[in-house]
Length: 80
Image (tube, helix red, strand yellow):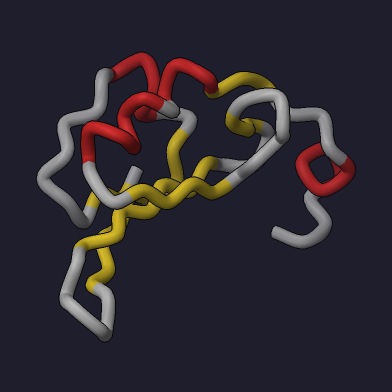
């Protein structure tokens, strides 16, 4: 897992995460945190593979929704 932030991720999630990054808004320099999952994992029932939030706390709330993904891209590796 590549972590470009100061977020501490519990070990049970780190093997499912590809990268955590931070970008800053061009308008007001507000931080935006991005969390990218590895192939085979997704968030929530929507099957999202990437999440962005305005705080680390909000981003961490998504961790407990990570579950195995069986979408076409995850199963075949297409699109990754």
